[in-house]
Picture 1 (cartoon, helix red, strand yellow):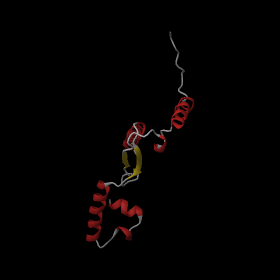
Picture 2 (picture 1 turned 90 degrees about the horizontal axis):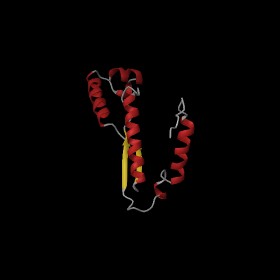
Picture 3 (picture 1 turned 180 degrees about the vertical axis):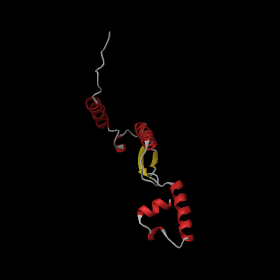
Picture 4 (picture 1 turned 90 degrees about the vertical axis):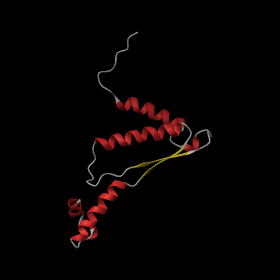
Amino acid sequence: MSTELPKTYNHKEVEDKIYKLWEESGFFNPDNLPDKGKERFVATIAPPNITGELHVGHALENTLEDIIIRMKRMQGYKTLWVPGTDHAGIAAQNKVEKQLAKEGLTATKLDVKSFLSAC
């Protein structure tokens, strides 16, 4: 038996069916899941880098986190996916602020463009 695939991918048709299935299953709401111990699983979303420019790494990270949080929810965990803090960004900001202090400046005295330039 041979099934011919369409020449173009109709994402709306395919994804709407899958999304409807997910909505009806209750997987978007951890309170609707059967009680399997209700352990918690928390993932944090890293903030954008200091330049504010998004790149393919951000897409990859968010996709992987989305897959993991959905899998954990389907396994019965009470899941939470929240914005987090970026320890590396904080360290970079600390270095820049120390350099600015040597010049008699503070981050709050600079406009955003000047602060990003200093970074």
